[in-house]
Amino acid sequence: MEQKLKELQSQALEKIAAAANLKELNDVRVAYLGKKGPVTEVLKGMGKLSAEERPKMGALVNVVRETISKSIEEKQELLEAAAIEQQLAQESIDVTLPGRPVKQGSHHPLTRVAEEIEDLFIGMGYTVAEGPEVEQDFYNFEALNLPKDHPARDMQDTFYITPELLMRTHTSPVQVRTMQKHEGRGPVKIICPGKVYRRDSDDATHSHQFAQIEGLVVGENIRMSDLKGTLDVFAKKMFGEDREIRLRPSFFPFTEPSVEVDVSCMCGGKGCSICKGTGWIEVLGAGMVHPNVLEMAGFDSNKYTGFAFGMGQERIAMLKYGIDDIRHFYTNDLRFLKQFSVHE
Ligand code: DAH
Image 1 (tube, rainbow, N blue to C red):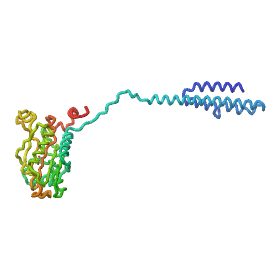
Image 2 (cartoon, rainbow, N blue to C red):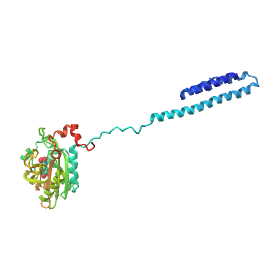
Image 3 (cartoon, rainbow, N blue to C red):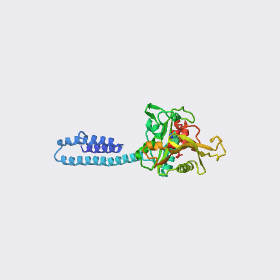
Image 4 (cartoon, rainbow, N blue to C red):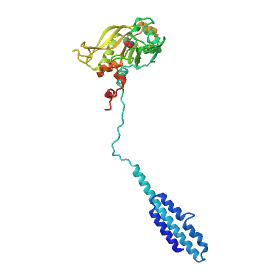
């Protein structure tokens, strides 16, 4: 029996040494120390032993059992440590690997231009105002001194939704909405960016949908010279300090007098293909707010005067960046858009 126990012990120790992982080690534990294992079997056979041999054998069984379980414990610690090492090795990060570049988008050129213009006017004390793109006939036309049968409505081909509801043809209705909110009290100083719609056939210079920026100042003693000074600052900041502006008489129903505003061309007046040899480029429409418009929006036209201007964002962007076709803004060719990325 003693012999058998010693053999069991050395067999078990061999298997423990050979166990390659925690599962194999546990199998060894179950096989040798479990209820059905050989050590328990030996214990069960103790009843047959003589009274002298029994304590001796009992002690030996205990020694064998402890030797095996201690060896299992030691091996378990080793295997656990190895498992942690392995996990750490697997999870380790090579901090010297170069990172994968994160592709960053960029602002659309129109967004850039609009923000630049907004910032410029915010710097002069204006606030940004917005209005709906689906607009009432009243705000888009009537309150801007364009009654239902006014021929000047033909200047803007309109998408009507119902006879009273339309896609706004310009950002000028935001003027009226803002003035109404002021309930006849000045000053009003706003800049209004937004999308507008016209029943135009798309080509290199026309689009059924484009973007405008509108400006409006209403207060006491606002004069044409204020408009001229403001637009001069705008032209210099937008296109360069050497640029000048020129006002030409024009007609808009909502302003009186009305002007068309040109900026001197970058050719310096020599004449080139952009200014078609004239030295000047038309950039916006403007004028002194018509007394009818002030009155219809609730302002006393004897006390208040104002100036307004409106321009196409695409036109400004085309002039600023030398873009020759308005369709580039909405066809989303990445080769075009990437040129305006500030990241590369
Ligand atoms: N609303 C005009 C247009 O779309 C542009 C314009 C001209 C706006 C003169 C104004 C202005 O505020 O005073 O053609």
